[in-house]
Figure (tube, rainbow, N blue to C red):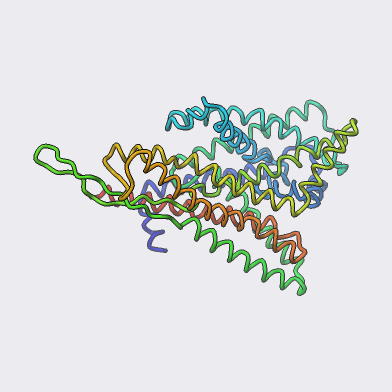
Length: 424
Protein backbone atom coordinates (compact mmCIF):
# COMPACT_ATOMS: atom_id res chain seq x y z
CA UNK A 1 0.00 0.00 0.00
CA UNK A 2 2.70 2.47 1.01
CA UNK A 3 4.61 1.63 -2.15
CA UNK A 4 1.56 2.67 -4.19
CA UNK A 5 1.26 5.89 -2.20
CA UNK A 6 4.92 6.68 -2.89
CA UNK A 7 4.41 5.84 -6.55
CA UNK A 8 1.42 8.19 -6.81
CA UNK A 9 3.27 10.96 -5.00
CA UNK A 10 6.30 10.54 -7.26
CA UNK A 11 4.24 11.37 -10.37
CA UNK A 12 4.22 15.15 -10.59
CA UNK A 13 0.91 15.45 -12.45
CA UNK A 14 -0.92 13.18 -10.00
CA UNK A 15 0.66 14.94 -7.04
CA UNK A 16 -0.53 18.32 -8.31
CA UNK A 17 -4.02 16.92 -8.98
CA UNK A 18 -4.29 15.47 -5.45
CA UNK A 19 -3.06 18.71 -3.86
CA UNK A 20 -5.55 20.66 -5.98
CA UNK A 21 -8.44 18.43 -4.84
CA UNK A 22 -7.37 18.74 -1.20
CA UNK A 23 -7.19 22.51 -1.60
CA UNK A 24 -10.68 22.62 -3.09
CA UNK A 25 -12.07 20.49 -0.25
CA UNK A 26 -10.45 22.79 2.33
CA UNK A 27 -12.05 25.76 0.56
CA UNK A 28 -15.46 24.04 0.61
CA UNK A 29 -15.16 23.30 4.35
CA UNK A 30 -14.19 26.93 4.96
CA UNK A 31 -17.21 28.20 3.05
CA UNK A 32 -19.38 25.65 4.91
CA UNK A 33 -18.71 27.59 8.12
CA UNK A 34 -19.64 30.99 6.67
CA UNK A 35 -23.17 31.50 8.06
CA UNK A 36 -25.95 33.69 6.74
CA UNK A 37 -26.74 36.36 9.37
CA UNK A 38 -30.12 36.70 11.07
CA UNK A 39 -30.45 33.06 12.18
CA UNK A 40 -31.11 31.65 15.65
CA UNK A 41 -28.44 28.92 15.53
CA UNK A 42 -29.58 27.14 18.71
CA UNK A 43 -33.21 26.92 17.52
CA UNK A 44 -32.09 25.64 14.10
CA UNK A 45 -29.88 22.94 15.64
CA UNK A 46 -32.74 21.75 17.86
CA UNK A 47 -35.17 21.59 14.93
CA UNK A 48 -32.74 19.57 12.79
CA UNK A 49 -32.15 17.13 15.66
CA UNK A 50 -35.92 16.47 15.88
CA UNK A 51 -36.59 16.18 12.15
CA UNK A 52 -35.25 12.98 10.52
CA UNK A 53 -35.64 14.22 6.93
CA UNK A 54 -33.90 17.54 7.53
CA UNK A 55 -31.29 15.73 9.61
CA UNK A 56 -30.46 13.42 6.71
CA UNK A 57 -30.13 16.38 4.36
CA UNK A 58 -27.85 18.03 6.91
CA UNK A 59 -25.61 14.95 6.99
CA UNK A 60 -25.17 14.86 3.20
CA UNK A 61 -24.54 18.59 3.06
CA UNK A 62 -21.70 18.20 5.57
CA UNK A 63 -23.44 20.17 8.32
CA UNK A 64 -23.93 23.24 6.12
CA UNK A 65 -27.68 23.23 6.78
CA UNK A 66 -27.13 23.16 10.53
CA UNK A 67 -24.76 26.12 10.19
CA UNK A 68 -27.17 27.79 7.72
CA UNK A 69 -24.12 28.31 5.55
CA UNK A 70 -24.01 30.04 2.18
CA UNK A 71 -23.74 26.52 0.68
CA UNK A 72 -26.48 25.04 2.87
CA UNK A 73 -28.26 23.40 -0.10
CA UNK A 74 -25.12 21.49 -1.08
CA UNK A 75 -25.25 19.90 -4.54
CA UNK A 76 -28.84 18.70 -4.05
CA UNK A 77 -30.39 20.92 -6.77
CA UNK A 78 -27.73 19.83 -9.27
CA UNK A 79 -28.40 16.16 -8.51
CA UNK A 80 -32.13 16.77 -8.93
CA UNK A 81 -31.50 18.42 -12.31
CA UNK A 82 -29.31 15.47 -13.35
CA UNK A 83 -32.07 13.03 -12.44
CA UNK A 84 -34.61 15.04 -14.44
CA UNK A 85 -32.51 14.95 -17.61
CA UNK A 86 -31.68 11.27 -17.15
CA UNK A 87 -35.41 10.51 -16.95
CA UNK A 88 -36.20 12.82 -19.87
CA UNK A 89 -33.74 10.81 -21.94
CA UNK A 90 -36.13 7.86 -21.68
CA UNK A 91 -39.17 9.74 -23.01
CA UNK A 92 -37.82 12.60 -25.18
CA UNK A 93 -36.16 11.31 -28.39
CA UNK A 94 -34.04 14.44 -28.93
CA UNK A 95 -32.47 14.17 -25.46
CA UNK A 96 -31.96 10.45 -25.96
CA UNK A 97 -30.07 11.18 -29.18
CA UNK A 98 -27.87 13.68 -27.34
CA UNK A 99 -27.08 11.06 -24.67
CA UNK A 100 -25.89 8.74 -27.44
CA UNK A 101 -24.01 11.48 -29.28
CA UNK A 102 -20.75 10.98 -27.41
CA UNK A 103 -18.83 13.77 -25.72
CA UNK A 104 -20.50 16.61 -27.64
CA UNK A 105 -23.98 15.47 -26.61
CA UNK A 106 -22.91 15.00 -22.99
CA UNK A 107 -21.51 18.53 -22.92
CA UNK A 108 -24.82 19.92 -24.18
CA UNK A 109 -26.78 17.97 -21.53
CA UNK A 110 -24.31 19.10 -18.83
CA UNK A 111 -24.87 22.71 -19.87
CA UNK A 112 -28.65 22.29 -19.64
CA UNK A 113 -28.26 20.59 -16.26
CA UNK A 114 -26.29 23.54 -14.90
CA UNK A 115 -28.90 25.96 -16.23
CA UNK A 116 -31.73 23.94 -14.66
CA UNK A 117 -29.86 23.94 -11.34
CA UNK A 118 -30.51 27.68 -10.89
CA UNK A 119 -34.35 27.62 -10.76
CA UNK A 120 -34.29 24.35 -8.81
CA UNK A 121 -31.93 25.87 -6.24
CA UNK A 122 -34.13 28.96 -5.91
CA UNK A 123 -37.23 26.78 -5.51
CA UNK A 124 -35.59 24.42 -3.04
CA UNK A 125 -34.15 27.28 -0.96
CA UNK A 126 -37.57 28.97 -0.87
CA UNK A 127 -39.16 25.71 0.27
CA UNK A 128 -36.51 25.13 2.93
CA UNK A 129 -36.83 28.67 4.29
CA UNK A 130 -40.62 28.37 4.46
CA UNK A 131 -40.32 24.99 6.14
CA UNK A 132 -38.00 26.40 8.80
CA UNK A 133 -40.17 29.49 9.22
CA UNK A 134 -43.27 27.35 9.86
CA UNK A 135 -41.53 25.17 12.44
CA UNK A 136 -42.52 27.34 15.42
CA UNK A 137 -38.88 27.28 16.53
CA UNK A 138 -38.22 31.03 16.01
CA UNK A 139 -35.29 30.25 13.71
CA UNK A 140 -35.38 33.50 11.72
CA UNK A 141 -34.92 36.93 13.24
CA UNK A 142 -37.04 39.57 11.47
CA UNK A 143 -37.26 37.88 8.06
CA UNK A 144 -38.32 40.55 5.55
CA UNK A 145 -38.97 40.06 1.84
CA UNK A 146 -35.60 41.62 0.99
CA UNK A 147 -33.79 39.26 3.38
CA UNK A 148 -35.70 36.30 1.94
CA UNK A 149 -34.64 37.12 -1.63
CA UNK A 150 -31.06 37.80 -0.50
CA UNK A 151 -30.84 34.41 1.24
CA UNK A 152 -32.28 32.61 -1.80
CA UNK A 153 -29.83 34.25 -4.20
CA UNK A 154 -26.91 33.65 -1.84
CA UNK A 155 -27.51 29.93 -1.34
CA UNK A 156 -28.19 29.48 -5.07
CA UNK A 157 -24.82 31.05 -5.80
CA UNK A 158 -23.33 28.72 -3.18
CA UNK A 159 -24.77 25.67 -4.95
CA UNK A 160 -23.36 26.84 -8.29
CA UNK A 161 -19.98 27.36 -6.60
CA UNK A 162 -20.04 23.74 -5.42
CA UNK A 163 -21.02 22.51 -8.88
CA UNK A 164 -18.15 24.46 -10.41
CA UNK A 165 -15.68 23.08 -7.85
CA UNK A 166 -17.04 19.57 -8.46
CA UNK A 167 -16.45 19.88 -12.19
CA UNK A 168 -12.92 21.17 -11.59
CA UNK A 169 -12.23 18.12 -9.42
CA UNK A 170 -13.68 15.79 -12.08
CA UNK A 171 -11.32 17.28 -14.68
CA UNK A 172 -8.36 16.05 -12.61
CA UNK A 173 -9.38 12.44 -13.44
CA UNK A 174 -9.08 11.08 -9.91
CA UNK A 175 -12.79 10.65 -9.26
CA UNK A 176 -16.23 12.14 -9.73
CA UNK A 177 -16.17 15.65 -8.29
CA UNK A 178 -19.78 15.71 -7.05
CA UNK A 179 -19.35 12.33 -5.32
CA UNK A 180 -16.11 13.50 -3.71
CA UNK A 181 -17.85 16.62 -2.36
CA UNK A 182 -20.61 14.48 -0.84
CA UNK A 183 -17.94 12.14 0.55
CA UNK A 184 -16.11 15.08 2.14
CA UNK A 185 -19.37 16.36 3.63
CA UNK A 186 -20.10 13.00 5.26
CA UNK A 187 -16.55 12.57 6.56
CA UNK A 188 -16.55 16.08 8.04
CA UNK A 189 -19.40 15.08 10.35
CA UNK A 190 -17.61 12.04 11.80
CA UNK A 191 -15.63 13.85 14.53
CA UNK A 192 -18.80 15.50 15.85
CA UNK A 193 -20.72 12.21 15.71
CA UNK A 194 -17.95 10.37 17.59
CA UNK A 195 -17.80 13.12 20.20
CA UNK A 196 -21.56 12.93 20.79
CA UNK A 197 -21.41 9.15 21.02
CA UNK A 198 -18.66 9.28 23.64
CA UNK A 199 -20.46 11.93 25.69
CA UNK A 200 -23.74 9.99 25.73
CA UNK A 201 -22.26 6.47 25.90
CA UNK A 202 -23.77 4.08 28.40
CA UNK A 203 -22.99 0.44 29.19
CA UNK A 204 -26.47 -0.52 28.01
CA UNK A 205 -25.53 0.67 24.53
CA UNK A 206 -22.61 -1.77 24.23
CA UNK A 207 -24.67 -4.32 22.26
CA UNK A 208 -25.82 -1.62 19.85
CA UNK A 209 -22.23 -0.43 19.40
CA UNK A 210 -21.07 -3.96 18.56
CA UNK A 211 -23.98 -4.33 16.11
CA UNK A 212 -23.00 -1.04 14.45
CA UNK A 213 -19.41 -2.24 14.09
CA UNK A 214 -20.48 -5.57 12.58
CA UNK A 215 -22.84 -3.79 10.18
CA UNK A 216 -20.02 -1.46 9.12
CA UNK A 217 -17.73 -4.41 8.41
CA UNK A 218 -20.45 -6.24 6.44
CA UNK A 219 -21.22 -3.10 4.43
CA UNK A 220 -17.57 -2.42 3.63
CA UNK A 221 -16.89 -6.03 2.60
CA UNK A 222 -20.09 -6.18 0.53
CA UNK A 223 -19.48 -2.91 -1.29
CA UNK A 224 -15.85 -3.80 -2.03
CA UNK A 225 -16.90 -7.25 -3.29
CA UNK A 226 -19.59 -5.87 -5.60
CA UNK A 227 -17.57 -2.90 -6.82
CA UNK A 228 -14.51 -4.97 -7.67
CA UNK A 229 -16.44 -7.96 -9.11
CA UNK A 230 -16.63 -8.37 -12.89
CA UNK A 231 -17.58 -10.87 -15.57
CA UNK A 232 -14.88 -11.55 -18.15
CA UNK A 233 -16.05 -12.06 -21.76
CA UNK A 234 -13.37 -13.42 -24.13
CA UNK A 235 -12.80 -11.45 -27.34
CA UNK A 236 -10.99 -12.81 -30.39
CA UNK A 237 -9.72 -10.59 -33.21
CA UNK A 238 -9.64 -12.10 -36.71
CA UNK A 239 -6.42 -12.22 -38.67
CA UNK A 240 -6.16 -9.77 -41.55
CA UNK A 241 -3.64 -9.65 -44.41
CA UNK A 242 -2.41 -6.19 -45.36
CA UNK A 243 0.09 -6.50 -48.18
CA UNK A 244 2.66 -9.04 -47.07
CA UNK A 245 2.02 -8.55 -43.35
CA UNK A 246 -0.57 -10.19 -41.11
CA UNK A 247 -2.41 -8.27 -38.39
CA UNK A 248 -4.81 -9.38 -35.67
CA UNK A 249 -5.33 -12.87 -34.41
CA UNK A 250 -4.92 -11.78 -30.78
CA UNK A 251 -7.13 -12.74 -27.84
CA UNK A 252 -8.30 -10.30 -25.21
CA UNK A 253 -11.31 -9.88 -22.94
CA UNK A 254 -14.15 -7.48 -22.21
CA UNK A 255 -14.73 -6.93 -18.46
CA UNK A 256 -18.33 -6.29 -17.40
CA UNK A 257 -18.37 -4.90 -13.87
CA UNK A 258 -21.05 -6.06 -11.45
CA UNK A 259 -21.67 -2.45 -10.43
CA UNK A 260 -20.94 -0.06 -13.29
CA UNK A 261 -23.06 2.72 -11.80
CA UNK A 262 -20.93 3.15 -8.67
CA UNK A 263 -22.50 5.36 -6.02
CA UNK A 264 -24.85 7.20 -8.39
CA UNK A 265 -27.93 4.93 -7.74
CA UNK A 266 -27.65 5.59 -3.99
CA UNK A 267 -27.49 9.35 -4.48
CA UNK A 268 -30.41 9.29 -6.93
CA UNK A 269 -32.51 7.11 -4.64
CA UNK A 270 -31.89 9.30 -1.59
CA UNK A 271 -32.76 12.44 -3.54
CA UNK A 272 -36.06 11.01 -4.79
CA UNK A 273 -37.16 9.38 -1.55
CA UNK A 274 -36.59 12.63 0.40
CA UNK A 275 -38.17 14.99 -2.12
CA UNK A 276 -41.95 14.30 -1.58
CA UNK A 277 -41.97 14.63 2.24
CA UNK A 278 -39.69 17.65 2.04
CA UNK A 279 -42.11 19.44 -0.30
CA UNK A 280 -45.14 18.27 1.69
CA UNK A 281 -43.84 19.70 4.96
CA UNK A 282 -44.40 23.33 4.01
CA UNK A 283 -47.99 22.59 2.84
CA UNK A 284 -49.04 21.20 6.23
CA UNK A 285 -50.35 24.59 7.38
CA UNK A 286 -52.10 25.44 4.12
CA UNK A 287 -55.44 27.24 4.43
CA UNK A 288 -57.15 24.73 2.16
CA UNK A 289 -58.04 21.76 4.34
CA UNK A 290 -57.65 19.04 1.72
CA UNK A 291 -54.18 20.34 0.75
CA UNK A 292 -53.05 20.32 4.38
CA UNK A 293 -54.54 16.85 4.94
CA UNK A 294 -52.87 15.50 1.78
CA UNK A 295 -49.50 16.94 2.84
CA UNK A 296 -49.86 15.37 6.28
CA UNK A 297 -50.68 11.99 4.72
CA UNK A 298 -47.63 12.20 2.44
CA UNK A 299 -45.37 12.88 5.43
CA UNK A 300 -46.86 10.02 7.45
CA UNK A 301 -46.59 7.72 4.42
CA UNK A 302 -42.88 8.35 3.98
CA UNK A 303 -42.20 8.28 7.75
CA UNK A 304 -43.39 4.67 7.86
CA UNK A 305 -40.20 2.63 8.12
CA UNK A 306 -41.55 -0.30 6.13
CA UNK A 307 -42.74 1.88 3.24
CA UNK A 308 -39.54 3.94 3.35
CA UNK A 309 -37.43 0.78 3.22
CA UNK A 310 -39.41 -0.72 0.32
CA UNK A 311 -39.22 2.49 -1.72
CA UNK A 312 -35.52 2.87 -0.99
CA UNK A 313 -34.87 -0.75 -2.03
CA UNK A 314 -36.85 -0.38 -5.28
CA UNK A 315 -35.23 2.94 -6.20
CA UNK A 316 -31.67 1.71 -5.63
CA UNK A 317 -32.43 -1.48 -7.56
CA UNK A 318 -34.11 0.36 -10.44
CA UNK A 319 -31.56 3.17 -10.72
CA UNK A 320 -28.71 0.65 -10.90
CA UNK A 321 -30.27 -0.87 -14.03
CA UNK A 322 -31.26 2.52 -15.41
CA UNK A 323 -27.87 4.17 -15.05
CA UNK A 324 -26.04 1.10 -16.34
CA UNK A 325 -28.18 1.11 -19.49
CA UNK A 326 -26.85 4.62 -20.17
CA UNK A 327 -23.21 3.88 -19.33
CA UNK A 328 -23.01 0.50 -21.13
CA UNK A 329 -24.79 0.09 -24.48
CA UNK A 330 -24.45 -3.46 -25.92
CA UNK A 331 -25.42 -2.35 -29.45
CA UNK A 332 -22.63 0.22 -29.61
CA UNK A 333 -20.07 -2.19 -28.11
CA UNK A 334 -21.03 -4.91 -30.62
CA UNK A 335 -20.81 -2.42 -33.48
CA UNK A 336 -17.33 -1.28 -32.42
CA UNK A 337 -16.15 -4.88 -32.09
CA UNK A 338 -17.42 -5.68 -35.57
CA UNK A 339 -15.67 -2.66 -37.08
CA UNK A 340 -12.39 -3.69 -35.45
CA UNK A 341 -12.68 -7.30 -36.57
CA UNK A 342 -13.37 -8.62 -33.06
CA UNK A 343 -15.94 -11.21 -32.04
CA UNK A 344 -17.00 -13.32 -29.07
CA UNK A 345 -16.07 -16.98 -29.69
CA UNK A 346 -19.19 -18.94 -30.59
CA UNK A 347 -21.31 -15.78 -31.14
CA UNK A 348 -21.96 -14.22 -34.54
CA UNK A 349 -20.89 -10.56 -34.90
CA UNK A 350 -23.49 -7.80 -35.04
CA UNK A 351 -26.95 -8.15 -33.54
CA UNK A 352 -26.26 -11.61 -32.11
CA UNK A 353 -23.29 -10.20 -30.17
CA UNK A 354 -25.40 -7.26 -28.96
CA UNK A 355 -28.10 -9.65 -27.71
CA UNK A 356 -25.49 -11.81 -25.97
CA UNK A 357 -23.85 -8.81 -24.29
CA UNK A 358 -27.24 -7.47 -23.23
CA UNK A 359 -28.22 -10.84 -21.76
CA UNK A 360 -24.95 -11.19 -19.84
CA UNK A 361 -25.11 -7.58 -18.62
CA UNK A 362 -28.66 -8.02 -17.33
CA UNK A 363 -27.71 -11.14 -15.40
CA UNK A 364 -24.65 -9.50 -13.89
CA UNK A 365 -26.59 -6.33 -13.08
CA UNK A 366 -29.36 -8.35 -11.44
CA UNK A 367 -26.90 -9.68 -8.88
CA UNK A 368 -25.19 -6.30 -8.47
CA UNK A 369 -28.41 -4.28 -8.14
CA UNK A 370 -29.95 -6.77 -5.72
CA UNK A 371 -26.87 -6.84 -3.51
CA UNK A 372 -26.52 -3.06 -3.56
CA UNK A 373 -30.17 -2.59 -2.64
CA UNK A 374 -29.88 -5.11 0.21
CA UNK A 375 -26.80 -3.33 1.55
CA UNK A 376 -28.71 -0.02 1.36
CA UNK A 377 -31.68 -1.22 3.44
CA UNK A 378 -29.66 -3.39 5.82
CA UNK A 379 -29.34 -0.52 8.35
CA UNK A 380 -33.13 -0.18 8.34
CA UNK A 381 -33.51 -3.87 9.20
CA UNK A 382 -31.04 -3.64 12.08
CA UNK A 383 -32.69 -0.41 13.20
CA UNK A 384 -36.06 -2.12 13.40
CA UNK A 385 -34.70 -5.20 15.18
CA UNK A 386 -32.77 -3.19 17.79
CA UNK A 387 -35.29 -0.39 18.20
CA UNK A 388 -32.80 2.42 17.64
CA UNK A 389 -32.96 5.40 15.30
CA UNK A 390 -29.25 6.19 15.13
CA UNK A 391 -28.20 3.67 12.51
CA UNK A 392 -30.05 4.79 9.41
CA UNK A 393 -27.80 7.70 8.47
CA UNK A 394 -24.61 5.87 9.36
CA UNK A 395 -25.33 2.92 7.08
CA UNK A 396 -26.22 5.01 4.04
CA UNK A 397 -23.27 7.32 4.61
CA UNK A 398 -20.89 4.39 4.94
CA UNK A 399 -22.16 2.97 1.67
CA UNK A 400 -21.39 6.21 -0.15
CA UNK A 401 -18.01 6.69 1.54
CA UNK A 402 -16.75 3.20 0.67
CA UNK A 403 -17.97 3.45 -2.93
CA UNK A 404 -16.31 6.83 -3.47
CA UNK A 405 -13.03 5.63 -1.93
CA UNK A 406 -12.97 2.56 -4.21
CA UNK A 407 -13.83 4.65 -7.28
CA UNK A 408 -11.06 7.14 -6.49
CA UNK A 409 -8.52 4.36 -5.89
CA UNK A 410 -9.44 2.76 -9.22
CA UNK A 411 -9.00 6.10 -10.98
CA UNK A 412 -5.55 6.55 -9.44
CA UNK A 413 -4.61 2.99 -10.35
CA UNK A 414 -5.64 3.56 -13.97
CA UNK A 415 -3.61 6.78 -14.07
CA UNK A 416 -0.52 4.94 -12.82
CA UNK A 417 -1.02 2.09 -15.30
CA UNK A 418 -1.44 4.50 -18.20
CA UNK A 419 1.82 6.25 -17.35
CA UNK A 420 3.64 2.93 -17.04
CA UNK A 421 2.51 2.01 -20.56
CA UNK A 422 3.66 5.41 -21.85
CA UNK A 423 7.21 4.60 -20.78
CA UNK A 424 7.44 1.75 -23.30
